[in-house]
Image (tube, rainbow, N blue to C red; front, side, top):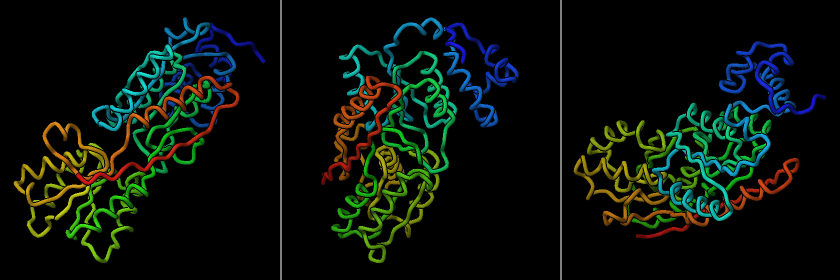
Length: 334
């Protein structure tokens, strides 16, 4: 087997793999365009040659990068912003610098962010993936193994992957929400969730419905994205019909709840509807809004995420840790 070559290029890899330079480039930049068997062969050769696909990173090969990556789908979401603040503080105390990426729910932006962190030879990455459905298996997972850079998941799990992470117990969260709603006199409920195939949305919705005992309530569900963009028109149309108007609106995250509140103000029905939220709507407290909901201690979650990350960094790379932390949150009747 050849020794690691700090000056290896895509030409060297292409020659060894008996493919074109373009194919090698695609294997790193657009891996979904390369056949899995070819991609795996290229990645194996790159690992053997210690190749890193970034000119700046070539100068880092013989030094230790003190970079930690944080990749999230929305830094506007208070759940992530509070957690990130805690991780950043802990990282600085341990001598690390943070590189933040907001993917805005884009798979392409997520791939580019992860590739950039690989290129800068980040010591580890905290990731809240753009999707958590069973079909999502991003190509950067293979690259993380090639470069032996630990990926620690936050909130959103990647199906059937053995990755450490800190997650929410979403079915129990839904059960807490359903228990609260079952004790209220209102029976007409609108649940607004994320994507219909999202494991988070599915678990929270199932928990709510199970606790409510479906037959005793009139429940309607509208799904979309977690930023309340794709479902906004559906919710507007639904609420515009007087016969549909719910007594309670349940937002499955804080941004969705905020979008529903704003829409109800626009339709002049805000004072006729009650709200329940999973996590606090952004800036709600600043406007005197006290919404009942299941809320999470993002500082604690950040501390656990940082612990998982730095444990993975310090542990021998041939023996990565595997650990999962689950939290339910607290029911606050505001």
